[in-house]
Length: 446
Ligand SMILES: Cc1ncc(COP(=O)(O)O)c(C=O)c1O
Image (cartoon, rainbow, N blue to C red; front, side, top):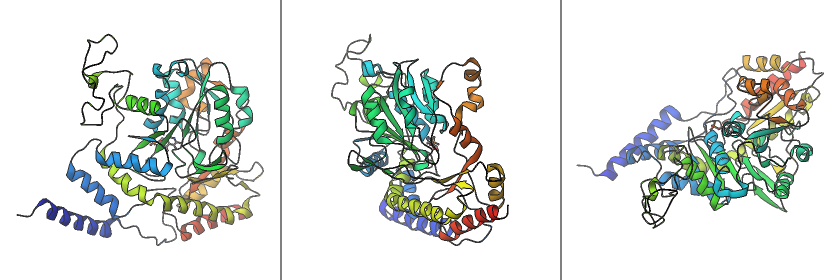
């Protein structure tokens, strides 16, 4: 009879053959092939890891999760990483951690205010509203598509407790100004880094990864993102108290921080007093928060471990593809506003975002339709103006639950005139050239 190692080796050989036969991505582009805005880029290693996790059959969070958390922390140079099941869950856990009574006077309470933008991904803002805090929306600038920092002082009030913003499509917001602003008023800063993994910002005289300057940062590993686990997300922080709070909200609200399947890490499992429980109540079943279960699995993390090794190459490809488009689209800048990196930043781009100029002679919707007809996938900047969506109907009509400071002219303009195309590592020169030619064909044939 063959032993475990021999059977595993045979399975691995078959997985490699299966990958080569059915998955290996060809880079040959034929005119008319669909050009996706993003997608999974992987090789046989992702499949091998996934099969390995399946054979181990641990099913929940285990050694692959630990390896991934360590790998991502090392990449970013942060102390703590908590893997969760999506970027939206990461935003929820990060925000809810700041509502813990354990933070005393820094706790975000219902009715407190959080500075945000409405040109956002919905779940960067939704946790604020779900909890009963009040988002205070400021406009963004074009062509950076990040918060207009000149409005920050005006947005601050006695109730402001935090700033919660995404680095839009990889372009970092002004971390120097915003971190200083947060320090001045003792505010928490959450960096939604879901679209910016690998971006850098020159902060206090040194280059730092985005996601390491705020108190908490969040990540998404849904397939279009810089790396994928299928579904997945993470929260990172250098603050050990916040790390414990994030894990508590992720893991049912429990007080205990034992890893899955492990007991008595604190060595006081039966010797503590909590709330009005009997003395010595099993720490594993003590709940200090009203939590969720947002954990991820070893299957997801196993794919992530293989993806992390490719991340530096992915970041480089995204930068090169973005620069290639920017250089070759300069001659249509009479008609479209091209994107710009924020000062002091080195973005790991998520996409190439454009805004149709007011006097361009065509609409964004006509332009997008033309490109889609040529099988070039396009995307809008998420919600455009989140306040205009049906989920805001009640709040909008009652005029409660959020505030707007100054106008949202650029946010509305983005909703009307902006869209983006892909720069992911699955692009190649042929696809980029095809997109450039299609854009020029549309504009030159007006
Ligand atoms: C900026 C931003 N934040 C949060 C998310 C949510 O991530 P997920 O789709 O993994 O829930 C996304 C998703 O693309 C995003 O772009």
